[in-house]
Figure 1 (cartoon, one colour):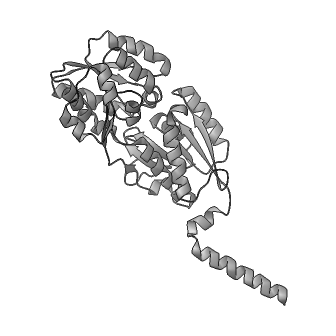
Figure 2 (figure 1 turned 120 degrees about the vertical axis):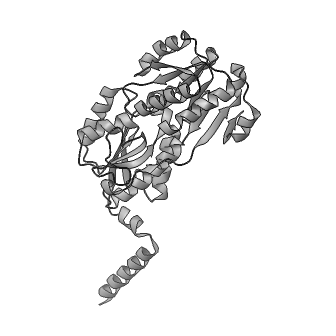
Figure 3 (figure 1 turned 90 degrees about the horizontal axis):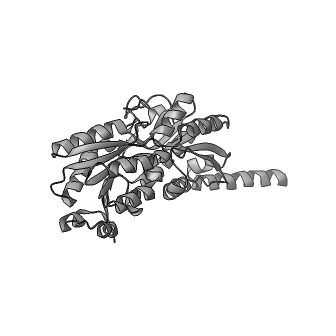
Length: 330
């Protein structure tokens, strides 16, 4: 009889403890969850966003090595490597795969129609065919999206504030990234609307950047607009060093490019996009279907200016622009 009382007492204590813990945290302790991550660019360039992703998971009760395992893979701007890593991940019996940027998202989507895919910082997923609709994606893909083409004309305007009367700008573009097509069209249209001639220069791999730099340097442009591509983010220091050497004011979508020595950025926070991706991971691990989860679009945009770079370029940043900036690097 004493053993029976002890068992009932233990069951009562466990039930009481369960009532004090959120239900999704109790569920998470039941088994080790295994998910994948595939990034289009390099790991070294994404330390802060990945830490934000891990932090977002911890806030939801997932701790790597304890109740969740994340298999990380990186494409380093190489399409073949993305395909190889995708095949590896699909053999690991994962519950879902998180993807960063459009090239990785398309590679996983084309190879797999069943395992849920959570995208982070993917440009216009509807245009690239990843989802059917932002409000109801259907299929096996959902997550965080950027509509970067909407901010490109503003980036061109920022260049005109630094260089009034500018006549020619270079636009650095990766033709292999389908999410850049609307960005490029928006950039060209925005430039022409201001009486500026756009000069498009392509680079579809890190190895092609030097050739692109040579083309830009010989094209008689006064500034450089860099579209939002994983390669250009991963190689941000090379791009900044080139622009400084040739005294070219630059504008980007990512503040990380400015932190690496670029002049200005106007766009969303990739770090916050990664943090938001953790919420989708949690929902799907708790049973939600990705096709039923609306895609969240970036809604907060910030201007970041590097005054140290401005001094190195000999560029004058209007005080009115400095005052409007959300962050100034001095």
